[in-house]
Image (cartoon, rainbow, N blue to C red; front, side, top):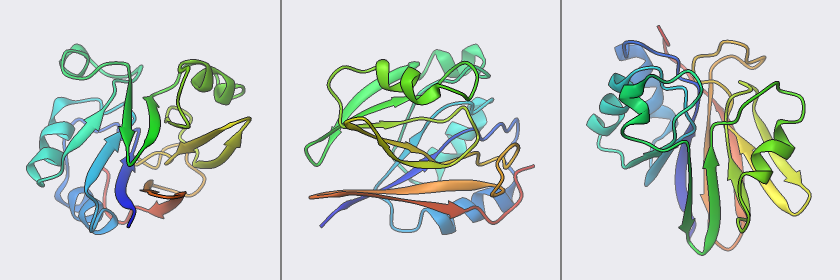
Length: 167
C-alpha cells in the first residue's frame, strides 16, 4: 500500500481563512504527511496546518520571513517508503528551474518543489519532478492547486484543485 502525501506550495498567506483550511482538509483527506515547498509567508500557515493534526515537513522559500527560516531549512532530503526525495522551493526565473532544482540534490529519485506557481509532474533526465502549483492561485493557470503524491512500489502524483478562499 502506498504512502499518501499532501503537497502544497506558495500559500502566500498572512492569515489563514477558514475557507482555505476547509478546502485543504477536503483535498488532503486521508494523507499521512504534508510536504510544504515554501513561500508560506507567515508562521500562521504552519501553525494552522499542524493544528489540523497533520505532520508537516517543509522548506522555506524566497518570500518567507525569518519566522519561517528559523523553523524550516531551505532544502531537505527525506526517505519515504524507500524513495529518496529532495524538497526545495526553487529560485530564479521559471525557465530552467528543472535543471536548478535537480542540481540541488545528488542522490534522490524525486524532487518536490514550488516557486513557479505552475503544476508539473514528469521526468527530468533520471529524476521525477513534482510541483503542486500555487495554493494561493496567483499565477497558476489552473487556479489554486495542491498535489497528492503516492509513494510505494511506484510513484504517482496528481494535481488537485483547491476549493476554498485563499484570502
